[in-house]
Amino acid sequence: MLTKQELVSLYQKRAKNYDLFANLYYLIGFRELVYRKQAVAALNLKTGDTVVEIACGTGLNFSLLHNAVGPSGKIIGVDITDKMLEQAQQRIDNHGWANIELIKTDAADYIFPKGINGIISVFAITLIPEYAQIIENGSRALAKGGRFAILDFKEPENRPLCLTKLFVFLTKGFGVSLDLAV
Image 1 (tube, rainbow, N blue to C red):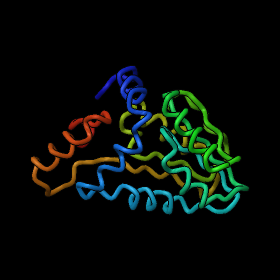
Image 2: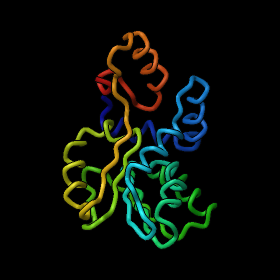
Image 3: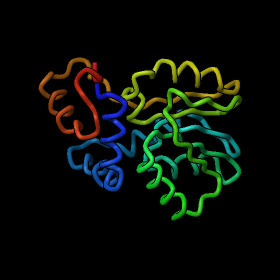
């Protein structure tokens, strides 16, 4: 597992082209957008709800989240990497969204607002050493009926180890390592 500083450095460098590289995984059959849609749907968000995205990166999920909460809802994107947040802000500006707040902080230090309707983390929370603390703190902040959706990597059962090692090799540039997959 990368240290926090190594992770920040990695994503500072990847920020400008992150979306392009993330979309290239479709070429090997990884249906990232399908999985993202499923994670957002699992939140069961309604118009006017408030949702927090942990490690929001460039804001790839903002369109899906905005469709779920509408312009009267609120999206809070939390990320430790300012270059990723710059890309997220550019996405917000390009779409003219007025209901998205970006917060630059370590997710482990983030204080969730009480009574939020949903929390989501996509391909990120297992990169954060304090992930259990984040899940605990976030869960306490959820409104009654609120949901916490985590979409992340795990080594599949009954799959050849060579396929897992290949996937880890292909995603190493995003900080993924074999110790995270088990």
